[in-house]
Amino acid sequence: MTDSTADIIVAGHICLDIIPTFSDDQTRLDELIVPGKLVSIGPAVAAMGGPVSNTGLSLHRLGVPVSLMGKVGDDALGHAMLDILSGHGESLAAGMLVIAGEHSSYTLVMNPPGVDRCFLHCSGANDTFAADDVPYDRLAGAKIFHFGYPPLMRRMFAEGGGPLRSVFSQVRAAGVATSLDMAMPDPQSEAGRLDWKAWLAEVLPEVDIFLPSAEEILFMIRRQRFDAATASGAADLASHVDASVLADVADELLDLGAAVVGLKLGDQGLYLRTGDDAPARLANIHATLGDDAWRGRELITPCFAVDVVGTTGSGDATIAGFLAALLRGEPAEAAITAAVAVGACNVEAADSTSGVRPWNETAARLAGGWKRHELRVATPDWRPTDCDGVLASPRDGTS
Ligand SMILES: Nc1ncnc2c1ncn2[C@@H]1O[C@H](COP(=O)(O)OP(=O)(O)OP(=O)(O)O)[C@@H](O)[C@H]1O
Ligand SMILES: [Mg+2]
Image 1 (cartoon, helix red, strand yellow):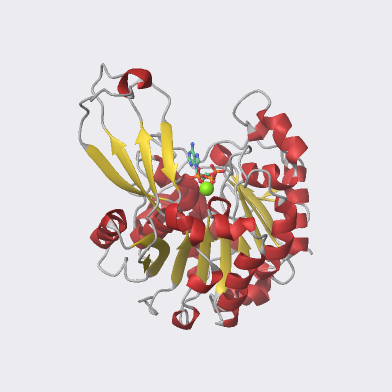
Image 2 (tube, protein in one colour):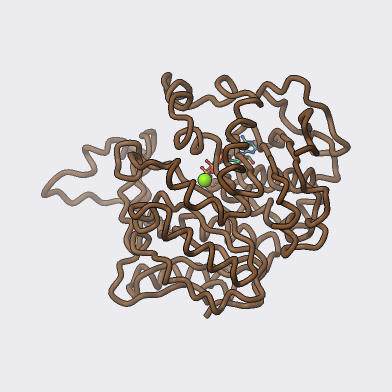
């Protein structure tokens, strides 16, 4: 059952991460995986992976009533996931789609000491998630429907943008605002070779809030720039992207149909652009979002300074902070501040959600004068705003 008292429904990709532990001298994968040999290893840790649990549980930790809508099989791994979710909150598994005959998605995370992690992943029921899996009659009462990681869900990309567009248009018909996060597909895979620009052109007219990472969106619609940024290894966005590149990309995404575009910038923070129709399209979430204050905004904010322990799920937590702020009717400056605040709390813990604190604790941390990093993305002519650490572009507040 989907909990109609939930303010936010988080749907999309979900999987079970199974993480074996190894002894200090087990440092070679080729000595661990040898045909015909039995190797003793330590106990396994089971953890949830994917945005349904990462963004969903982060929202739950913030205190937002949330319902999770991932698809799992009616099998042992599926029930393990439901148990883990229920352990975080009694009703959290109630909206999950449990389908007999499907296989639950799992990942074996091989992380021996001193070796680069290697993942063995089965996408399982994520690949068959289809538009008619969503129980639209149970969405009434929710304010936001957030969908995460369609590039990792075969039915959601292999037939073009049609299936996800259909999900979103039915969700909006129920009076619920739509929100979308992407994932980076493996460039060599079927998803990596897709025409993502065409896919976005189909889907974005039904997306009110679009929150990909800058890296993902450059891969999808600015491939040359992405290739240049990654030519020397990991992308260093700050040295390949300035504010004008972000503005250009965001304007194109607004033209394609999104009303709010937030681009996650890794350790550089968050960029926000909103269109002329943002107040109208956000008004159902909270009346104050219907004011002019959300029209034609262009803002950027760097990350808060923290001791980084692990960045797993940091993008998903950043989205939780942003959506929680929208639900509260916060102005745009405060919403991006809350987003990077929750993202920063996330990276203080190794796992994907336990660093996230309740909304009031996060707010108290902000009020206590939490330092931000300096922004390395070039923002010539941008000006400080009344909100400490948030910069506005020369065209902020104009269409
Ligand atoms: N070093 C850091 N310090 C503080 N906050 C950080 C740091 N690194 C990342 N974050 C937060 O996490 C967000 C992650 O942005 P990124 O562009 O990596 O998104 P993503 O690719 O969707 O992340 P994920 O890998 O979790 O899916 C940033 O917007 C910021 O809020
Ligand atoms: Mg992400």
